[in-house]
Image (cartoon, rainbow, N blue to C red; front, side):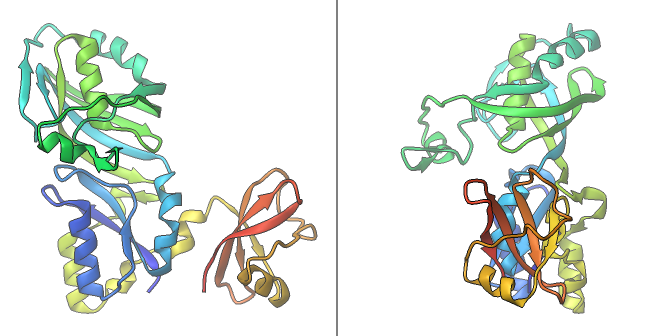
Length: 296
C-alpha cells in the first residue's frame, strides 16, 4: 500500500512510536515519517507507507508552520520544559513593543546552534545521548530560514508565536535565543506543528481515529496519494518506449513535450494509464532528463 497519512501526533509520544503503531496495525513493513517531532510536541506528522517512503526527502524539504508557546524568565538545558532549569529571571518588565522589536532580528535567514538534546550527530553519536550522559560539546552553528514570525498571544511571561520556516529550524533554539536577546532567558513550553508542506492540522487524523479506522477496515481511505506532495512540479506523460527507458534508468529527451517550462530542474513522469512512473532530473550538460526515482 503506497500513500501518506496525515497524523496529528499526541504529546508524550515519539515520532517513532507513531511509525511503529502504523506498521503494527497496517502490516506494511515500509513505513517512515517526514520530520521528527519532539515527544512533548503535537501536530502534523506525515507518515509515508510503501513506495511513498522514497519521497520522505521531498517532504522534509518543504516549509513547516509551528505554533509555539514560550515562557520568558526560565532557561533549561534542553531549551524546553523537559530539561533541567538552569536559570530563573524576572521577565515582568518585558513589553509587547520590546518583543516586536526583538523578534524582527529572527526573521529571514538566521543562524542557530542546535540544542544538546537533538538528533544531530557528534563523532557518530547523537547529541542527546551525550547530553543524557552529562557531556556537553561544542556545536557548529547552522543557517535556518524564517519566512514569517508573528505574535499570536502575549500574557507575560507567556508568549505564543506562529513560525513558518524552512527545514532544519529548531524552534527550541529560537525560544532560547529569543530569551538571550531579551536578557531574561526563555524556554519552549509547548509546540504544535500546524502545517508540513501540503498537510494541514485541520485535515489530520488523531492516533485514536487511525486506530478506529484500522479496526473498522477503512484506514486506506485516510491515505493521500504519494504524488500529492509533488503537485507543484510539472507533469509529463510518456509512451511505453520512454517508460521502459525510465525504468532502466536511461537518459531521455522530452524536447517534444511543449508543456514543460524552460528552466525547471525536476518533473514527474506518468504512464498513459495515470500511474506515477518516476521523478526526473534535468541534466543541463547533456540536455536530457535523468530518472532520479523510479516506481513500480
